Length: 145
DNA sequence: GCCAACGTTGGC
DNA sequence: GCCAACGTTGGC
Image (cartoon, rainbow, N blue to C red):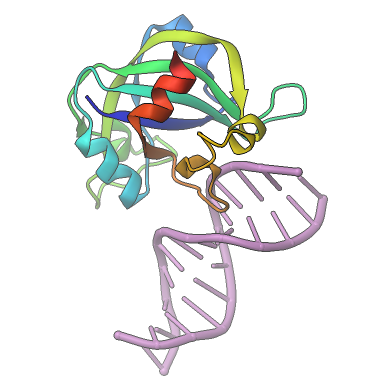
């Protein structure tokens, strides 16, 4: 099993939205490297659900756990002319995600950076803007335990 | 709102 | 293929 980190603006689609929906198609990824990671996903892989663009009240960080619930497939929003991410000329990919749980306590980016075990995570790297990135098993286990 | 870090685009 | 301009992301 592989581990991943999914980034979403908390104000746009949060872990609470995923909890409400139970399951959602993770669409709209329009970056080749992120797409390549989506293509590597397999059913049962676990994801850290990260909120970006945080506020002082709700800082950026990991807020929950999601699980890959389908094989990667063509992103339906890429061929939907009404979608803001409409881009039919290129091959974009999405996967279904299901809700697993919220963290009892969110782990903020600040805490990740302070923790000697966790600060090597990709998400702690300055300028890291990928919305999908791999996570080491040891990092996942420490955060998602 | 600012700005650094990227990725993408397009002229040449 | 180079690279400047531009757009976007996301921490602060």
